[in-house]
Length: 262
Image (cartoon, rainbow, N blue to C red):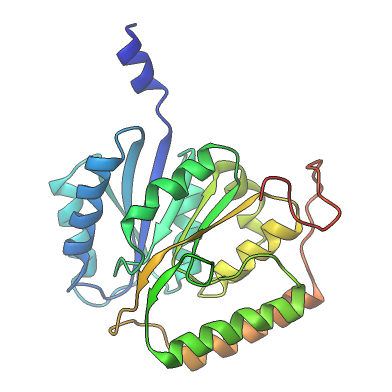
């Protein structure tokens, strides 16, 4: 086998998941944009885009299946009969055998320039990597209402758990195969709180987290129902506070509680 063939065989496998619900207007454009980016900047990986359809009632599934036919091997489709971003990520990640799995919102609010940094962090020893709109260096464009809600929510998590990450809910995260196998099964939530729960369980059990400041632009057509989501998040925090999952691991932890390598 030549050196070129050997390098191709050993390229890391990466699945980039896009969870969608009734996104017939934006899906094709977003997938095409992501595919073009991966063709240009993902040559070191054996990548695939996975569209996870959350029980859409419009033409989203039909469009996803057409994209799969258009780009076989590069685009795959998963269909769920129930809604829930957490449910979609759990299904897509656990069914994948890629070395690294990640996800991003269909509106691509997080600039794709940060995707290589996220994936390389996971390939270089971190267990979880995620975008942050609140970390130093982040550049964010969004309304005052959402900014206040986001900061208050993350402050509330701090009061509950005294964690070390700044932004729990940015729709731009990735994990290793080990985290899929060990942490994801312990995440209870099937909707928006999935992200927060994943990060808290991972950090408090000694997994290495990498928070990446990102360029992020708010989508005015977001499907997130702020008040309902906030209430579900509060219930999730209380549930975790009462019953927190613990994993028996041998990973070394610094006295401060921060995993080595942060």
